[in-house]
Image (cartoon, rainbow, N blue to C red):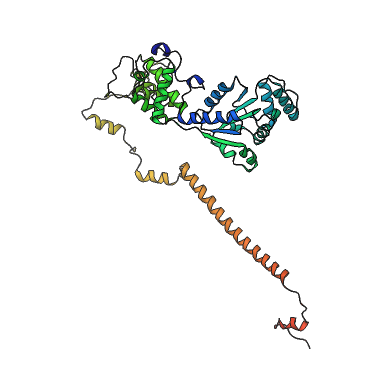
Amino acid sequence: MLRNHFSLNRLPFPTTPDISGYFPAESIETARRTVLQILEHGTGIPLIFGESGMGKSLLLRVLEKYFENDCHVVYMANQRLRTPKSLYQHLLFSLHQSYCGMDENELRLLFLDHLFQRETYGMILLVDEAQSLGRSTLEELRVLLHYNHQGNPESIRLVLAGDRRFEERLTHPHLNAFQQQVVARCYLEKFRREETGQEILWQLKQAGCQTPDLLFPEEARKTVHKLTEGVPRIVHQLCQQALALAADLNLTHVDETVVQTAWEILQQLPGAKNMIPTAGSPNDANETLVIEFGTLDDDESVATPFGTEHKPDAKPFDESLLPEIPFTETAEEPETVFAQTFSFPPPKFDLPDWGGMLSDKVVPDKKQPEVQRRESCQKLLDELSVMEQLLTEEISVINKMKKIESDCLSRRVRRVSPTEILASFPEMPKHK
């Protein structure tokens, strides 16, 4: 429906890596040229860093397409290759070789044997999500680069792409040898405002749109950049949602209101569906969108008899079941009759009697749960404070005993005569 409405050849904003929609922005194009130069000469390991949605997978797919006719390219994505054994199993699988029932050394030798016997010119390993690789796997990849066939440095080449966690892992001291093989670090950045607009127009033109400026005006493109902050994947998702919404409303272009509504739908904010304007409604600049959170149903009865509100099959309330109150004609006012009939307290009881009756009862202490919780916590803190004081005193006694013991052990022993001993105790009588 979207392609027919806007006369497009394909969906203009793919959310998965599609090399046909590669837009040469500054950061990704610089990274592509740098990695190509390194791979063509085989001088080391280039690394690609970028957060989720910045185009790492797209860049690796572009490199795969560039070298697919010259050598065997292996693209590894979302593989939790924690051990070298799992790495060689995946590589043999890419070569259509059996890898069952073998240990790590046998897998390594089998891989190298098939690699050197192939007619193609070497192999390039493109590893995506490199932050999931184990440390032993990274070390195995580094050693694998030294297996050059007949002195050819381009037998095995390697490219790793990961996020910030991968960059932090490389600072581990055990990966110093791996870091020495790294010759380039490429960082993928967000789109600038002008790049976001150029990206939108580029994708629409690649999809067959003849007038991309009219389909996506400049103000709508600025709104897209403001909402997405220039993240490529989110830019594609928002533009795709905006085009689909405009096609549903039978609009000829995407304006700021449609972009804002599409963003609300993507973010799943409350009332986003109610913000979608109906087809044929005027798109005035002064028209505002109202978020509706729902209203009460007018068909429901306001006053529902007790016990029948949750019972759809209940019978209507019968007023004949109420007790009959005899009506007596009197000249007094109705308020006076009501006060005499339903007086409180009853005449036979006095207020002091009510107080005496309540004084004999024990009123239960109904405290709020929060107050009880605070009292329990305060009581526990008091007990802990007492225990802390006792432990402090015991530790002080133990330290004094240790000091006395240390003094006794370090004191020099000398012989003392009985006369000196008796002299230290003057209260003892001296026997002649």
